[in-house]
Amino acid sequence: IEINEAFSPQVVACEKLLKLDRNRLNVNGGAVALGHPLAATGTRLVLTLTHELKRRNARYGIASMCIGGGQGIAVLVERAG
Image (cartoon, rainbow, N blue to C red; front, side, top):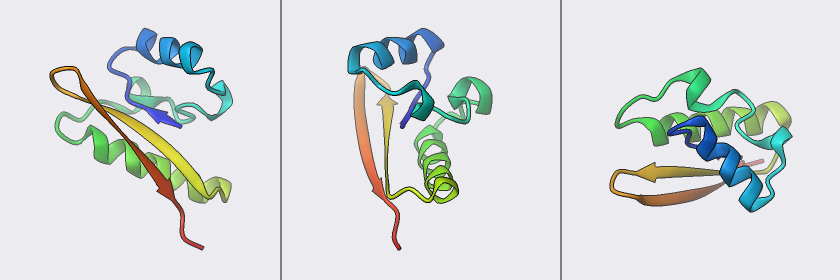
């Protein structure tokens, strides 16, 4: 599970509210550790997610992204094979 980290407390709030498994949430550190590339955050999230799916030999992953102005989007990724 990849959640865009606009700031760290936001991810903690989502984790608690949605009862997410911390061991599966932003396992590589998220934007705080990897950086927040303006205009390319969605790409960074999806690439991190797809690499982690391959590493774990997992089938599905989900990423949520913010969009300026308070909007948001989520994407469900299925690994082929």
